[in-house]
Image 1 (cartoon, rainbow, N blue to C red):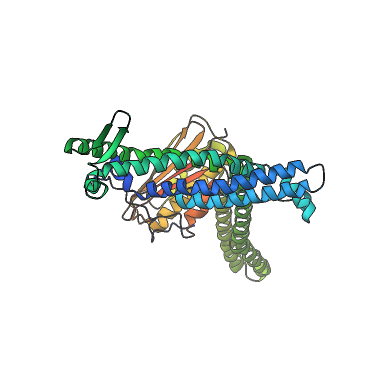
Image 2: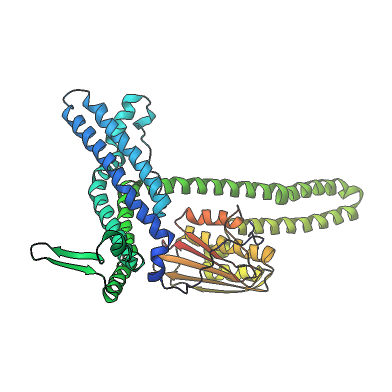
Amino acid sequence: MAMDYGRAETRDARRPHRVPAVLRAPLEGRTWREFLHHLLSLPIAVVAFSYAVTMTAAGVGMLITFVGVPVLAAALVGARAVGAVERARARALLGMEISEPEPVRARNGRRGLLPWTGALLKSGVSWRHLLYSVLLLPWSIATFTVSLVMWSVGWMLFLYPAYWWMYPTWWGQPGMQLYGDSAHDTDFFLDNPFEIGVTCAAGLLVVLATPWVIRGLAYGDRLLVAGLLGPSRLAERVWELEEDRGVVVDTAAADLRRIERDLHDGAQARLVALAMDLGLAKEKLEEDPEAAARMVDEAHGEVKLALQELRDLARGIHPAILTDRGLGPALSALAARCTVAVQAEVDLPARPAAAIEGIAYFTVSELLQNISKHSEARSARVDVWRSADRLMLQVWDDGKGGASTSGGSGLAGLAERLGSVDGLLVVHSPQGGPTTVTAELPWRG
């Protein structure tokens, strides 16, 4: 595994704005996108509500005959189509990252229209889509009305000084009429500088408040979309577990291949050569005892090298010091073997589960190997502690930086391994360094 120190992970340079948020909000793209979302919601809601109510009522009414079943199925299919449109609209205008729900699958992998229709009618996701199509109309009426009225009235009042002159020039009245009472011949127009200024100030307040109202309504849209159109929490968890299982299987297979390769190319090859040398020494034992003694002495050296390779291989599988003494002494031994000066500090009240302890050890091991090979660092530090129900690891080095989890780097594979056990890997490595890699693992003591 290698850290990709050649390419730094791209990050937005978030500098503090000189203009306060309340002043720049009316002109921000987010405000206009969410406002457009509210405007589009009403026509979409009218179509979706009409289709959902009509088809559901017809289907329920005809359930006494077989015709009602396909009509209900058509209602659910239409609702799922509306859901697909709404998810795309939420991604584009609300910036939501929402996954697609689980598709309709018949039990036991059966194929055909009837099994698929039965699965569709039993699908909770489909009925949630239908519920969304019904609830969208009253909610969109509220969001459409509030956002459009506040937006238009706010800008109309704020810009009143710019078009006030049009009233006496073109429309024959001194200004905007605030109210009128024909019975008492009482009219009130906004026509003097003070009234025009107050109108502009009131409009400015409405303009500044409208984006936050729009964002609050958009938050309701996000809740509605995420709650009814996304995958269920159970389905998301099942998918995560399936992906994690695949990662674990691939990792185990890769480790087995590495062990087999190391045995074949290292200790096994050395032991084969040792057996051949001992066979030659046996043949020369009577003819040339001195040569046989030299060959036995060389074979003794080969035995030592083979034993060292086997120890290193066993340490790579699971070091004995980790099993016997725990994570603190194991990481201290690991730091002592690193080519960079490493300070290791472990502050744990107890030992976590053996599996988590092993993952933590090999995570630090691979990160220290990357520091030795790629970082050009002079010093490094390893900190391990417990925070609530999480085991925290942090590896810091003063190298050249530029490490990234993108682009198929080794850190990406390490992040996948940690993710397979509900762990997390965070990398902060600007160009020029330093690099800080933080890992979280479940405690599972």
